[in-house]
Image (cartoon, rainbow, N blue to C red):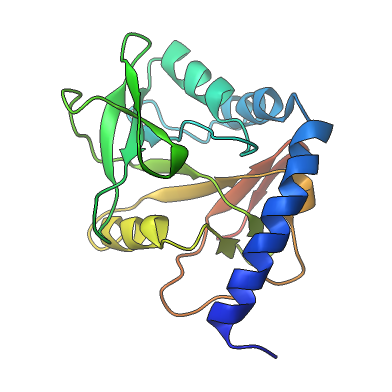
Length: 191
């Protein structure tokens, strides 16, 4: 069995390739997931909700962002710091302009206020039934969740295609578990 970093690296390449097909096969997945999130009341009224602006074939968080704004939730999007540090989250509204950012993402302008999220919806490449998540390898969400969980209760849910589930995702001590996963087929809570 290869060491964890090598296993993760190989799995990332495979899942990035495979996810392209998952996205093409489920074009309405983001809208279905947004409906599931609202119907299951995953987001308290006073929550600060972190989502992400989807890139390429990521699970589309756009319908979730729109649903949260319609229901009066405060929405924030991540800003990736230049060095390995936790993410910063800036407020997003329908009027907020987005600008291109690192890694092909988009983020609110530096003028948008910084808020601390209490519910996070995160992208991923793979997940398993234990709530383990395979991200992109930068560790940004793991560092962010570790920092947020030190002194407050935050909930972290993955957004993924059902086909991204694997029997086991390799993890190490720095990996932060998910509280649940939302796919085009439903919600599963892990903790």
